[in-house]
Amino acid sequence: MSAEEGDDPPPAPSAVGEQYAGVRDIILLAALLVLMALTLGVALVQAWPPAAQPGAVHKAEQAVRVRVLFWSPHLLRETRLFIVVAAVGGLGAVIHTLRSLYWYVGNRGLRRSWVLMYVLEPFAGSGLALIVYFVLRGGLTTTMASSSDINPYGVTALGALVGMFSRETAGKLRAVFAMLLAPAEKGADSMAPDDTSPQGRRPGGTPGPR
Image (cartoon, rainbow, N blue to C red; front, side):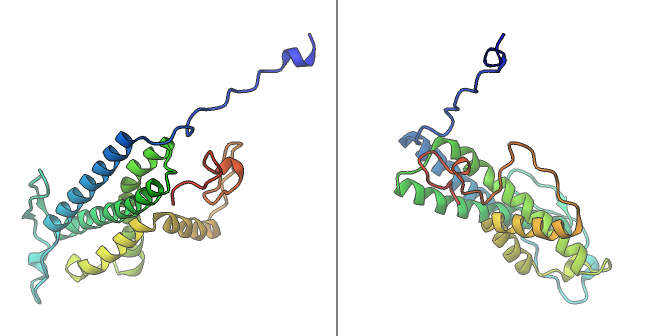
């Protein structure tokens, strides 16, 4: 048997990313993103903590009944801040995806392979906003700080920016931890987030949604 006969056949080219998104895909995706934005906005308003009154720190630490969408639990002010950060992080990511969506639809360059990214980006923005909040809250404030000392407008602005610029935030965190930890080994199929090689570009030679 020759070497050619013993070699495995080359893998068939993947058809993922070859098709453009149709009108129905665009309408459903846009409707889903708008629904996500409205839902996260409602949750943000409902979970917003009241302003802490001077000398009423102990009252701010008490759990009160709050209605958040279809959920009506008793929440501490600290827990309400978690919900606010998660909601506004997802809302910021939705704003980013909506801007990217209408740009690519307007330029007639939206591929179906990017639909999954648009759907999952709000969840990534929400989780990343919470992580950044935990890092800043644990590293820049004392352990004795009360939740009544936290400015909800400050954490909301932080969460919104993290959600809108989740890619930049993840890159910054990656750079920080690369200085503290040993770099992870890269696999054969690894791809850098900023890869602009032909393998890292969308079919047709255009970079993917940003």
